[in-house]
Amino acid sequence: MCSINCRDIVKDAESRIARAAEERDEELAEKVRKATFEQLHSKFNSDLEILKKRIPTRDQEAAEAAKDVKYIRERQACLSD
Image (cartoon, rainbow, N blue to C red):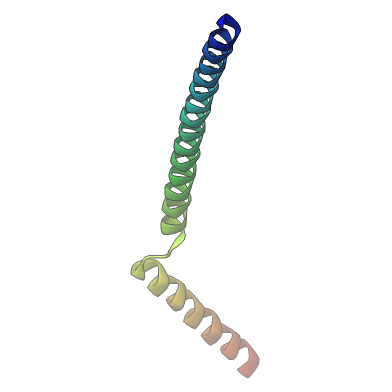
């Protein structure tokens, strides 16, 4: 009779320990997921800001277009001479 009760107690203790370990593993996995998401989110936002800074403004585009027109006129003038 004692061996049956002792076995039940041991099985119950083992299942509690296993559940606690599973819960701890799930908590750690959730922390890793959150940290990974935060890292990816931060990297994405950082990259997005870098890309936004590379987009030329209208003034920059106009200045480049003016330089292109000037260069083309100068080349045409050289070729005409």
